[in-house]
Length: 346
Ligand code: NAP
Ligand code: ZN
Ligand code: ZN
Image (cartoon, rainbow, N blue to C red; front, side, top):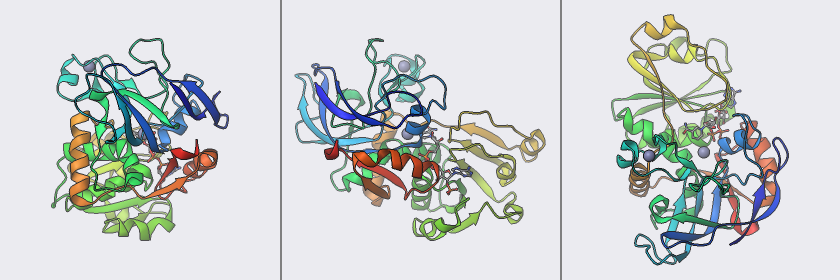
């Protein structure tokens, strides 16, 4: 199937217009006419080979929304015209215990990523969502509530679920004190979800200009981490610290914020290891944990939560020819709060 998009042809080069063939529809596939695709910082890490060797040409994009254009003969879950989304994986083994539990992101064989990897046939390079068409097995496509603005939904497929999952796993509620490190694509979704659950949310940001937006999103406090001694008054004040920062930071001043038995969840993936101060960790039985996106049932649960609480991402819609500039601005933390590409411009 002829598809038009944008690709990185080599690491660290600008993305350029790119035409390619997708597989033809199988009996269990849905074909998607893409409407919007979000730009995740992970797209930038991979297109620039910041996580190690990558596969080129690479059409990035794993925050995809659109409309079902066609369905295979065995498709039961979707019909033509339905709103549909695709996230960070397009398949998995389906038989391991994690897949059976709906934790496809932790499949023991490894999830089949939306791009920068091979499809299950181990031959076809999977290409992502910066384009006009997508083909995916119905079991890995997400149904999208009709009440929400479609532009703001695209980022829910990665940024949204990546914060929703740990917020649920660590049982955030009205009595929780939560700190969110970094107010970017992921961080701003974390603020919205934790605030909707009634938590007392603090944003820890190195961009003072984001204060007003953080409070408008539901944070009760905003702390500028570029100010000397910023963490002094905050030590032992939080149950959960969600680290969404895309760059290497010294975790120690953030670990010090955790109250007894508190957890710092590593979500940002800068590509280099973090150093941990053992003294800070063992004082108060603190934990460091990780969390990666979420499985299909949890994405569906999040979509319902978003519909009930009227939550979408704050987006800046761009044309395809602005992708490279959007990458530069994202890396400079100049994003409000997710770039979303209008797929009609491919
Ligand atoms: P983003 O929109 O660029 O946001 C990252 C934020 O981190 C920035 O807006 C900035 O917030 C802060 N930051 C950036 N550089 C910094 C620095 N040098 N010092 C301190 N703070 C800095 O990125 P994103 O799309 O939200 O992704 C964030 C990270 O999560 C990326 O590494 C991405 O690969 C990773 N990720 C992980 C998962 C997962 O499953 N765990 C899923 C998706 C993405 P302030 O301006 O507020 O300081
Ligand atoms: Zn992502
Ligand atoms: Zn599996």
